[in-house]
Length: 210
Length: 129
Image 1 (cartoon, each protein chain N blue to C red):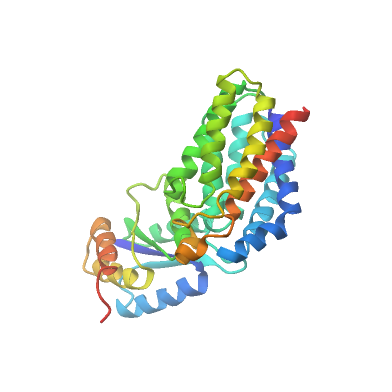
Image 2: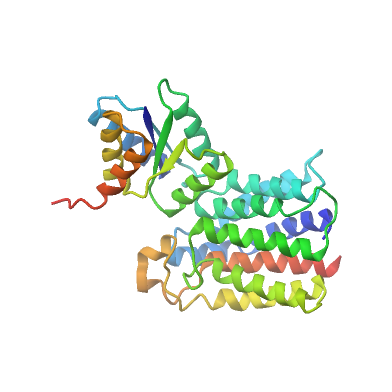
């Protein structure tokens, strides 16, 4: 992965979240406070502005930290802190360099997922974005271990992530605002899982075309 | 002494609670209220600012934080990690209103952060009637 690709992934993620903002808000309205799309789109606009600013860092680790800090400062509630923690932790696995190999990028993704899970105290099946992150990471790691290119693996993970997000619908929420609904949360897709699937689509879009 | 940080998605809720506990402890315990307004929500940045303000008050050597909903707790935990505040800010697993009352009462009699956080957590077990 190059730092140029890394930046473009975040520009693309911002575009996708903005396109799907109303849909994310609608999903959040059913079991949350109806602002997931608006919140995340606002944070990603700040990310894009920071990454595109004159004099912003070009190295992978520094860019990743910059994204994390932007999300921490602009996205309120759990989403900002979870995404911010993920990026700050991932930055520690990335080099102060313009490029890294696929294994390093995958290791950074693992750090991000571990941070999300430990920060949110969520387990698989709790109807949170962990239900997409954890199996998506497992597929990414297995694909790369089998010798698949990073490019092909990203496309496979993006496709799987959409299915994983849909599969949160029947689950009963045990974390986050939706957990107050108990069994009544079943039947609704988790909005954080849908935005996570959009992130993986952004990764695939950029990695597959560059 | 131990100060208390109140973090709510709504700044007005946090400030209203501060008004209540300030009255209950006659202003003897430094209390800082942080929260969102437009938009609602607790960001890591506002927690960091609140902690700085709390620890800057005379005589305050540690703080105990209480949050309203899960997102506030996630922001508090993240602030402790990235601000390297371990040992300076303890997060209480407590109901916001009763926990804040218990926390300032414990702090007012000179308890340290562990005991203040424990008092807040125990408040969740007390029946209301």
